[in-house]
Length: 482
Image 1 (cartoon, rainbow, N blue to C red):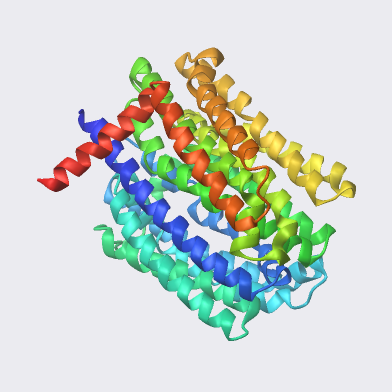
Image 2: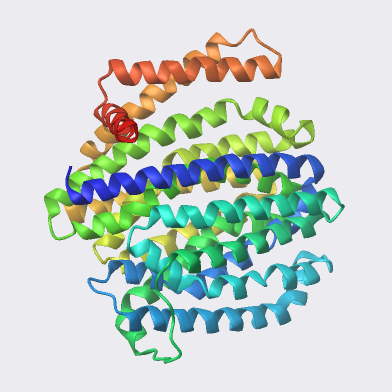
C-alpha cells in the first residue's frame, strides 16, 4: 500500500470513528433534550444559526483551506492566521453584541437579544483555535482532531442535559454550544504542537489572500445556503415551525456529517497532493465517489425509510410534524457527500473563483425560490431547497470534467449502481413490512431486512469498494491480533 493510500485510509478510518462516535453521542443527547424541551426552545436557537455560521466563516476567512493548499507553510503563516482570526473574533462579537436588538426586532421577539449576546460568545472562544485546527487539518492529524472533538461533545452534551432538566430551556442549548466550542478549543491547543508568537506580521496573509478571499466569499454563501431556510422560517412563520424544521434538520445533519465529515477530513489534502498527475487524481476522485455512494445512499435513504418510527420511538409523538421534513432532507443528505467530493476536487486545482461564483448563483436561486414558494408552506420550501442542492451536482460535474476529463457517464457508473441497489433494498424492506403496524416492531423489521440484504447484494454484485473495505478492516484486525 502506497504512503498516500495508507495515510488516506488511516484518515478515513479515524474520520469514521470520530464521526460515528459523534453520531451516537449527538443522538443520545439529542433524544434526551428533545424529550425535555419543545419546538419553541429549538426555534429560538435555530433563528440565530445563520448569524453564528456567518461570523465563524468571517473568523476563518478561508485561510484554513488556503494553508491546506500551500506547498510549504511556515510558522509565520500560521502566526498571521492566528492573530487575524483572534482579532476578527473580537470584532465580530462586539459588532453582533450591539446588533442583537436589531436581530430581535427582525424576529419580533425581544427575548432574542440576551440569548444572542450570550450565544455569540462562542466567536471569542473559537477564534483562538483557527490556526491550531488548520495545522491539524493540513497534516492529516485526523486521530488528534477526533480526540479533541469527542470529549468536548460528551462534556458539553452532559452539561446541556443537566441545564435543560433544571428548566433552563433554550439557555441550556446555548450553553451546550458554548461549552463544546470551549472544550474543543482547549483540546486543539493540546494536540497541536504549533504555538503562536507575539511578533505580529500580517504580510503572509497577502500571499494567501487571492485564494482565501474567494474562499471567504464562497463560504459566506455556503452558510447562507445552508441556513437561509431556518432564518426565513423564523421571519415568515412561528418559532414552533422553526423548531420542527430544526429538529428534522438536526437528525439529517448528524447522519449526513458521519459520511461528509469522514471524507472531508482527507479529500482535499489527498486530492491536492496528486493534483500534478491528472490520471492519478481522476482515479483517486472516482474511488472517493464510489466509497461515498456506497455509504451515503443506504444510510441516508434508509433513515428516510424509518423516519416516522424513529421519531415516534426516540423523541415522541410531539415531533411527528418533523417527519416529512426529515425525509426530504435525507434525499439531499444522500447526495451531499458526493457534492463535497466534487467541490474538494475543484479546490484542489486552485479554482476557488469557480467554486465561489457557483455557490453564489446557487444561493441566489435558492433565496429567490424560497420567496416564491413560501405561501405554500414549510414543506414546499424544504422540497425546493433539496431539489436545487441535488441538481447542482451536475454543475459541479461540468467543472470537474474540464479539470480531469471525467465524463458524466463514468461518474454515473461509479454512483448509480449503489443507488439502484439501495432503492431495491429499501423497496423490498418496505413491501415486506406493510402488514406491521406497531412502531417498535416496524422499526426493527425494516432495519433487520435492509442491512443484511444490502450487504448480500454488495457481495453478489462483486462491488470492488465493498470488498476493499472488508479487506482493510480484516487487515486492521490482523494487526491488532499480532
